[in-house]
Image (cartoon, rainbow, N blue to C red; front, side, top):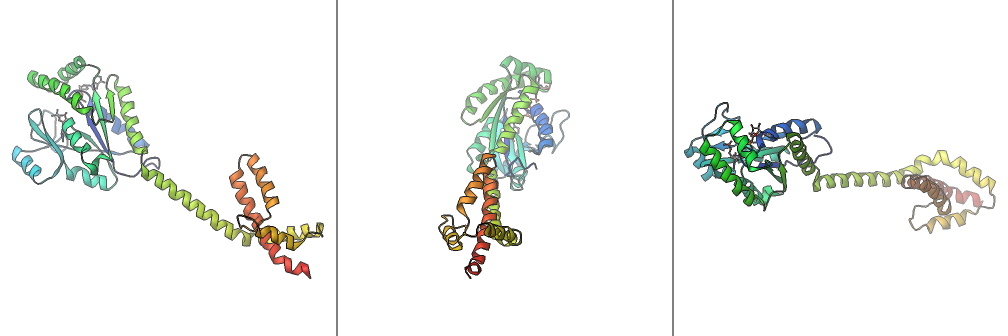
Length: 311
Ligand code: ADP
Ligand code: 5GP
């Protein structure tokens, strides 16, 4: 997983009329987001409808009898289920929840009734994105259904009627609507929505917050350690400074060190001067920190030297 994307398992819910291009888009987008670090697991639904030519049990759908479907529904084994085109369809908990728990991203192709049930589930809605796919027009929809060659005339009519209901019902809870006119453009749009959802989270901010805390701790730690580490390097320079300015009063320096509002035990006038130079170069924060550390080392040495200079 790329560090750009949050690690919380997310549900991508793709809905829209039969023939809108959901299967085509899901297949295309799954291929395209994989290489940038988002692995989408397609959730295989249960259905009571008969397999079509080319469909494989447990890959296209888990095909099951109405009795078995009913048992599963009674036992609460679906996160959502609905009647669609006079057949039952459902998303099983086993198919989705374990993956989400493991931090995996799941993509569903379900109708608006199922999408609404998930939107109403507080445990799932916050980690879900609802996308509605629609063709450029009803004429396009009808044409695609015919060209696909999978449905009878009466099935095509039922699907067209349902498309009208779907648009009305979906208004309340879809986050995005994508018009699947040009397939490439629609794929880009779906990809953008998925990427945006994987960037949008508190978890990412918390992770960055933790990094900032670690940096702060490291910084505070370094300030405390540096004076000791810098002693051998800085002491000769300070001795030279004292030699060059015999009038330098160690007690006055001590006083300046104690009145430092930040309590870092540094020579304020000098550090502020150097910090200002650093800031002028656009790296003020880092330079100020380093300068503070070095000067606090210097003052520590001054403090140690002070008694001996009195004698
Ligand atoms: P759904 O899964 O929504 O029922 P499909 O993905 O099966 O729809 O697409 C229905 C038909 O429309 C398929 O034959 C598919 O190749 C075709 N199709 C999908 N997207 C487009 C598009 N942008 N332009 C033209 N035909 C498309
Ligand atoms: P088809 O039978 O053509 O594959 O799918 C018909 C409709 O059922 C599509 O709109 C599809 O999104 C929807 N569908 C597929 N699986 C599920 C599911 O698990 N739950 C719900 N609610 N709808 C589903």
